[in-house]
Structures are given as C-alpha cells and as structure tokens.
Length: 169
Ligand SMILES: [Fe+2]
Ligand SMILES: [Fe+2]
View 1: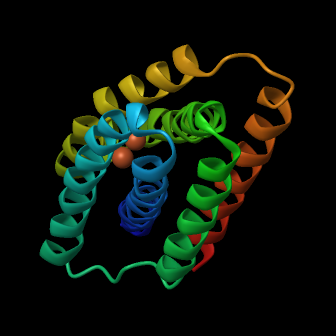
View 2: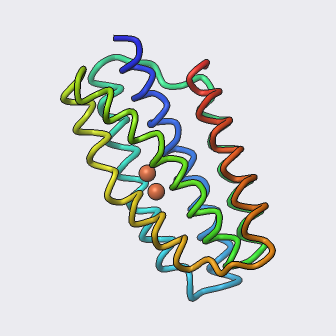
C-alpha cells in the first residue's frame, strides 16, 4: 500500500533529521551550556532508537528511503546550529515546535494505520510517548521571551515543509 510506504519513509527521514538536530545541539551545548547537555543526549538516544525502528521496517519491506534524506540531515544540522547558537531558550523552543508538529502528524498516521497496517501502526505508536515527553520538556523549559513566537513559527513552518517535501521525494 503506497500510503503506508510513504508514512514509513517520511518518519524514517524525519528521525534521521532529528538525530542531526540533537547531535549538533549536543555538540554546541557541551561547550556553551553544559547544564542542558544531558537532556539533549537523552533525547538523542531516543531518536536513535526511533530511527532504527523505521530503518528495520524499511529494510524488512524492501522500501527505499526518501530521496531527500540528506536534505533532512543538512536541515537538521542547520537548525541545530541556529538554535544552539541562539541559546538554551532557543533550543527548547525549537524542541517544543518540532515535536508538536511531529505529534500532529503521528496522530493522523496512527489513525490511518490502525485501520490498514498493524505492524506499521505499532512502529509509529512506539515512538509517541518519547515525542510527547520531548515536547513537554521543551515547552516547560522554554521561557516566553520575544524569541518564542517567531522562532516557534519558523521551526514549525520548516518542519511542515520538510514533511510535505518528503512525501513527494
Ligand atoms: Fe523521534
Ligand atoms: Fe523527539
């Protein structure tokens, strides 16, 4: 089923992007704000598990990965650099924004997969609690500075665009 393939492929690419965001933020945090490094490291470890969940499913079903996967990696590094250089607050705004956008997509994916594909449903369902925890942590730790709204919108727009583009590639 094409739609199921597309969902797995987009999620796989998205997790790959998430790994690059958190890895870049972690790199900067280790120099600039050591206090936030352990939490970023923990989120990164979750994203690595998520990625391997979708990677195994792609392999098992002989589905190709997204042609734009290197764009996700590149975009992830850029977003990680930009947020990491703007400061702790930007890191948490970025996390809250990305994860809330991701969760919005997980909702409809799970709704669709629950009726069409049990195995893929289980894969998507398995990452949901982690993404919720990331979103909550980000939202709780981001203080509402002048930065919050514009940054939140920019990151949301970028994430939505990347997801949309991935369904075409
Ligand atoms: Fe994830
Ligand atoms: Fe996440």
